[in-house]
Amino acid sequence: MKVTVLYFARLREALHREREIVELPASVTTVAELRAWLAARGEPWAAAFAEIKRIRAAVDQSMAHEATPLREGAEVAFFPPVTGG
Amino acid sequence: MTVRVQREDFDAGREIARLREGDPKIGAVAAFIGVARDLNDGEAVDTLTLEHYPGMTESALEDICAQARRRWDVIDILVIHRVGELRPTDQIVLVIVTGRHRGEAFAACEFVMDYLKTEAPFWKKETTPSGARWVDARDSDEHAQARWKETDSR
Image (cartoon, rainbow over all chains, first blue to last red; front, side, top):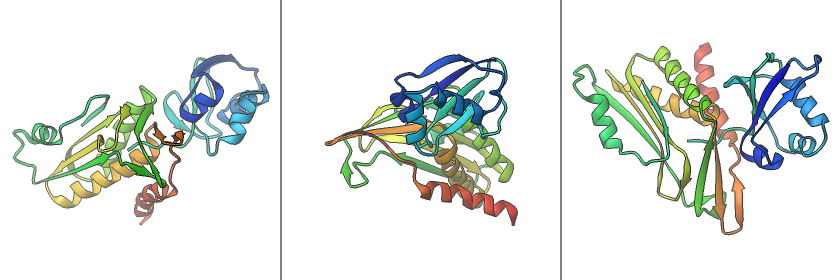
């Protein structure tokens, strides 16, 4: 399964990138599994996902939970808690 | 229902006039303007840069307004949120709610702001004399949003 991953704010800066397209193994089917898989690739993902607190996720532009399933071609975003307004 | 994400400033008076135009059912207009302060967490703020998630931002704001409309019998809601670089005293966000009576208008306006603070994908970065820093989310904002959920279960 191929998904587009977007990063915002502090996480985008820590990773030095705002998007990447990744091909996932069959074992990665949820937001939590994707996050663990990204971090397992090593630096800078491992440190960024470990150090930035309360990272939230969206799938196809809707707020997601750890168990939210992924689909082929999904747009998955990771970001710190929002601070608008 | 109108949602706009823009770099440009806004004129609250003009937006209120537009929203009220020709609607004699409106008996109340509640408006909130969020403004950039010159001090945050004890440090002077020179600039404030707002990043957002294009596409999701608009749909999140529309969803928040739709939730408000389901909860209260309001007539219309407008939200304008700025992005890009701002300075202290600059306007950041405008929420206007029109309704028949003030109760619904006040409540819906506060609800929209409380949800915007915790659900809409905006992030603030400020520059201070000691460097640039991302603004941390406040627990008080989550508590403010949680109040509305408690009201739900009553």
